[in-house]
Every structure is written in C-alpha cells, then in structure tokens.
Length: 124
Image (cartoon, rainbow, N blue to C red):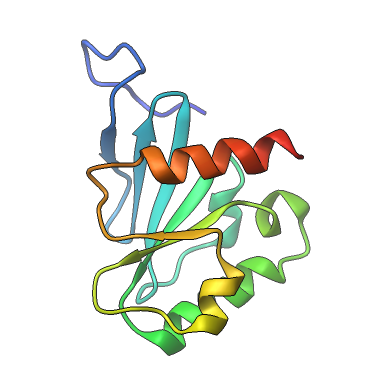
C-alpha cells in the first residue's frame, strides 16, 4: 500500500498516520483502516486499498449520506468494504446501524473491529 511505517514498527502495534485534514490511517496488526469524518468530503476511491473504513459519526444526516454513497458505489472493492461508525456524538439510529458492520466508541482498542473485518474478508 505504500503507507510509511515509523521506525521500530514490527507491524503488530496500532498506529495512526495522518494523510490530510480529513482522512487518517489506523493500523492494527496486519489490517489498515481508513478513518474519515462524515463532515468532510473525500474521494470514495480512497477506500480501495484499505481493509475497512471507520466513519466518525457526528451527525445522522451526513453519516447516512456517506454510508449510502459507499454502499451504492459501482465498484465492489468500495461497496463491500467493512464499515464502522466511531460514535463521537451520540448513538446512530437503527437504520444506519444496519448499513454498517459495527460501531465503536474507543479507537484505542481496534481489536473488535479487526475481528469483524477478518470475518467479513474471509467470506469474500
């Protein structure tokens, strides 16, 4: 993927790489997640090389629009990507929760979303 690793990384730790103001990369063991905000636009094609996407849930309407855009994308490598909501400001409603693969309120522990991601990827 070409994501730079800090010196001393053995690939088993969790790392945060800032790509720009609106997207970040989260690394957990062998998996790499794209962290995006529902408030700022980004190109959906940026999702392709990642194992999953963590969406900062800040507002129902913008989060729903982003999830719908990803799930209705014309490329399989985008619409089948595991999606997770990072609950910063409240709980998502049931509709959006059904369109994603999980939620988290703690990015300090990526193990739960990593386990779900591995399970999804094993079925693809």
